[in-house]
Image 1: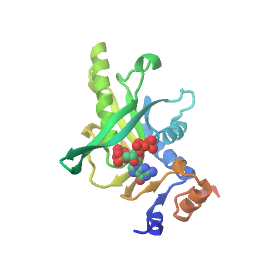
Image 2: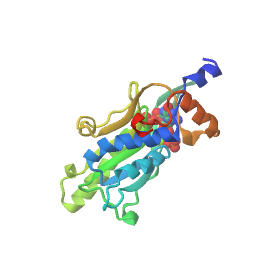
Image 3: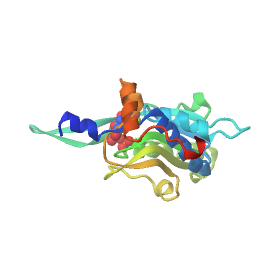
Image 4: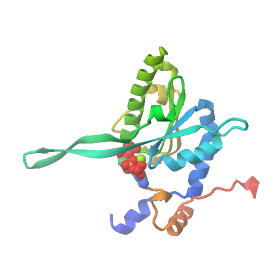
Length: 217
Ligand code: G4P
Ligand code: MG
């Protein structure tokens, strides 16, 4: 592919589009009744904040957002002069400070948010590590760890072979929410753009901007 073809293959997504994907998804996510949102940074931050607006119920406080940051490194192994990739390693850059935040996971419905489910490596890691915290905190309180439920919200789930799985208790219970299931292409998110005017124009051309229902005009 030349650079023009690469450019043409990107799926541009505008802020308006993301706002509406969050709104639309919130109606379904409300059935999960999240008590706590855990946003995976940086990509999960903006969707998490937008979604929270639509989860707000009158007379009830906002769902709290906690942040975790995970970094992915290609683990390169060297065999003789040959260099081969031996997998992807996830490293915690930031995790929940349970003591400082006075938050615990016991008995909660926890919604994990990221922008894209690509290889699934990050989401898998986040769920497995959070589950370890659930076990530790539940044992300390003498509560069954199964009383904590996890859900996942992503804007886009790419259809491709994943490098890691997510537990059945998320995938088979209807608690995995992807606003859109998309082919394996490169998605251009607005927060990465250095030219938001061009970005938004491309999103509009591709039909990935604001959707105005015919009944509201
Ligand atoms: P995964 O665990 O979510 O499946 O993602 P993967 O390891 O394959 O992706 C590594 C990084 O690439 C992640 O960013 C992920 O968000 C990003 N990524 C994957 N596919 C796309 C895409 O189509 N468009 C864009 N814009 N990004 C993509 P990260 O390291 O978590 O960085 P950030 O969250 O701080 O932005
Ligand atoms: Mg990310």
